[in-house]
Length: 110
Length: 111
Image (cartoon, rainbow over all chains, first blue to last red; front, side):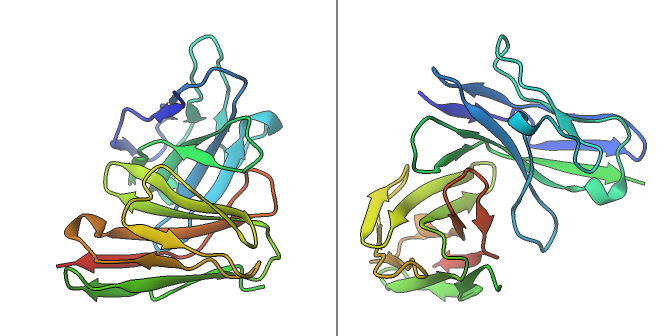
């Protein structure tokens, strides 16, 4: 079964501290993994995707197929990073469907 | 472009009432989706459409219906509203890739 698990509902860190939001997935094929973010009073939007291997707003995420993980990391958290983060998986179908994790609220304290 | 628009923003329904949540996109995207967002549960796919005239069930379709008569519009119909349908509803679209463009959401309360 296809599944995305984000074990932490809430992650609270101080400004300047490193951040790691965990994401594990279950999928039998070769998935595409994504991180979406929802800032307060804004729409859910794509943050980054594993195939682009880019850093967005200082965030990076590496796909670890052995551990079936796609953790989101940032070395120094900023207050403006406070938001809800969703990990998502796209399977092999051509429907564009995404499977989302439960979401993690990141709270960056001053 | 307005992107994906949803109406209404908020709604309170009584148990057993019906309503339609509207979703419109002006990006000429073929693919459209309806999700519900419940606290601690993430986003669950209700229905989706890969083009006008084509719809299919997602993970949690019970209690909902959709139609897709045009590329732009993808309304979600709730028949006989129940408290379990209290949620935030998001509509999204994509031209075909996995980057989905989301609407602002509709917060629905059923009492």
